[in-house]
Length: 82
Image (cartoon, rainbow, N blue to C red; front, top):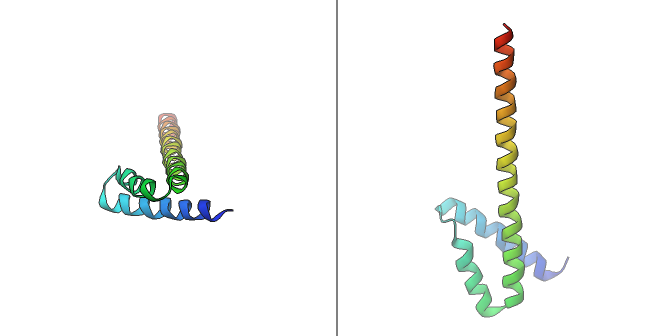
């Protein structure tokens, strides 16, 4: 893995941790602006890493919601049988 990707990954992880802790859901855009002024390549890699992580979160939320719904349906079905 290149140093560009390694740096982008670490920045994305750190940014999302801080963003979550502060409750600022668009903080990554501010970081991207700072990066863009210094390195467009790092800015693009960082934004890709952010998008991938945010998409993964949405997919996990979807899966967790579907799982909870399925469990609730099975529990309700089991209770109806009793």
